[in-house]
Image (tube, rainbow, N blue to C red; front, side, top):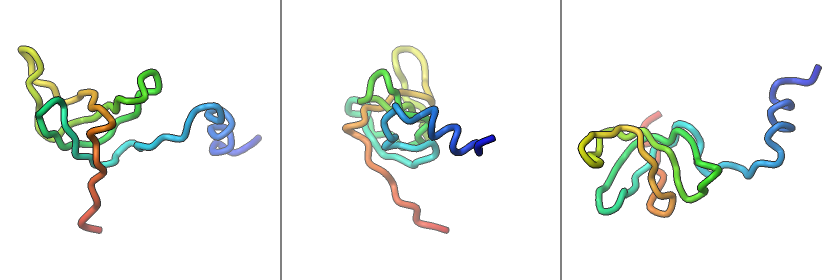
Length: 83
């Protein structure tokens, strides 16, 4: 039986390599609102959107949201300052 890593490599061979990986810290903008958070996943159906869990909520309509789609053009990767 092949290893689990080989199984997933074969299963995902036709998908593009992800630019954003789960856990990447990001800084971006939703409209004019600056946001900071963590990447959950890229959206393969709409490649210009990244699902993120924000550090502080954003008010959209009448509710506050922690998990939102952020346009990938406005995202910058944050560097780790500690180890």
